[in-house]
Amino acid sequence: MVVMLITILAFSDTYLTISNGNEDHEKFVFSIPDSVIYVYRIILGDFDVSKFGSVAVPLCYILFILCTIFNTIVMLNLLIAIISETFSHVKENAQNASYKEMAALCAENSYIIPEKMKQTYAELNRYIIVVTDLEAEIGDDKDDEVIKRIDKLRKAVIGKVDGLSKELRELRENQKT
Figure 1 (tube, rainbow, N blue to C red):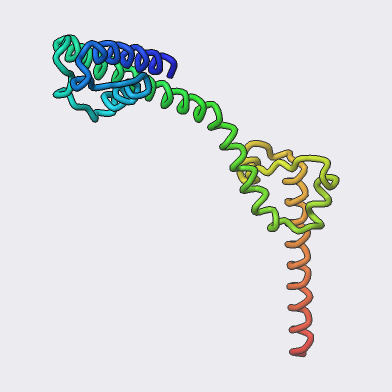
Figure 2: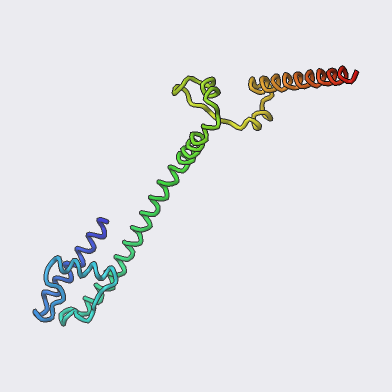
């Protein structure tokens, strides 16, 4: 931006000097703010080269070409710099944003876990609860305490169901006789 400001001021001063060399009715800029606006309009593509007057017209055309080319290059470099900076900033924050999104999903779905279960995991507001895929852990570590408890509970349920089935059969046999 500083380079852009310097080029605008340099070209506007040059155009003001050339314009002051013309007669009053041939001047195309009249003051410093007017010449700055004139150069800015050249950069944007809004210009009128037919009003350069009669003094140093070839120099005005050369300055016009230099102004459009140089300031366009400066503007494109400025655009590239802004885009590059934004991209690097986004790239730096990508992993943090990913973790933040995962934490938001966990927090959003925390209603699935009953309150009694939550209180048995950790003291309230004291620890962070880490959620993992139980099926993936089963394949990795068979000696896990949770897996042992689940297996014990499964065996107990199957034992109870078998015992109830046995009792039900006995009751049916007793009723038949």
